[in-house]
Length: 253
Ligand SMILES: Cc1cc2nc3c(=O)[nH]c(=O)nc-3n(C[C@H](O)[C@H](O)[C@H](O)COP(=O)(O)OP(=O)(O)OC[C@H]3O[C@@H](n4cnc5c(N)ncnc54)[C@H](O)[C@@H]3O)c2cc1C
Ligand code: FES
Image 1: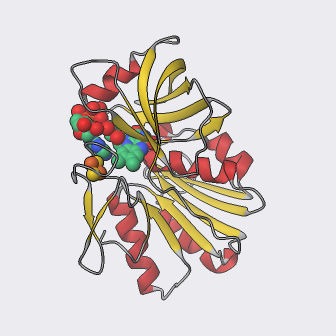
Image 2: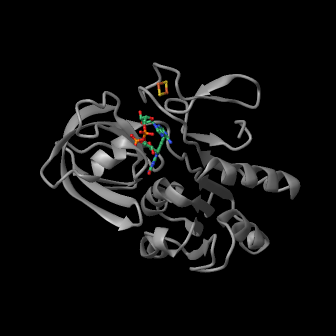
Image 3: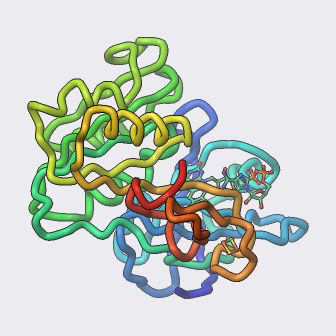
């Protein structure tokens, strides 16, 4: 984990209320798909950095995408090329992809698709079957990037404006028997992850499944316990340090 000052290389809207920012680090850092960064908003009044999944690493350049939510992301959206921001990275465990997992189903919803793209672009020698869902066409982004890195891509929307009118979990499960993946990786809103967990259980599917969780965070480095989630055995885990990626059966969703 490094604390660095980065330079904003680009920062622009890619869909309704969604921005992509590329920063240049002063030195290269190693990153695993699913790890995240903590970045200052550029406003000294915001004491806490904001956490975002790392979407792409190209040498010293790191790209992440963010949805406008509150004051911090609004402030980030105003950053211009050349601005300096403080960043801490890489954080969290990321997706540990077993060597034997040759066929991987990728199930993502909304802003949850960003950390998943980092996995399919960086882990070589696997077949990725991607299922990504958006609220509607105006929120859709990165479809060409997913297409380029996946063996097969299915895009769906809540309103049917792109692809079928369904969600990513249902789209994946409807093709499960055909694809027979060795591993499932997923990231999306809590309601989506809960549906994935209950549907896998209901259908008796025991394929290993890794999910990336999102909790409100304070420090991002395991010290403040703001981000604690419940594990299935009754113990607690820190999403920032012990996660954000967990086995789906290991955590309460
Ligand atoms: C591991 C991880 C990865 C994430 N990756 C992405 C991503 O790739 N793209 C994306 O759009 N969003 C992502 N988020 C959510 C993102 O961090 C929040 O939307 C953002 O921090 C909101 O900041 P704000 O100041 O605009 O909102 P406010 O609501 O004003 O934030 C106030 C405070 O609450 C914290 N906070 C608010 N919502 C969240 C949240 N959902 N998670 C954690 N802290 C929160 C903020 O960091 C800040 O300290 C991720 C969250 C986590 C924990
Ligand atoms: S955010 Fe502080 S312990 Fe996780």
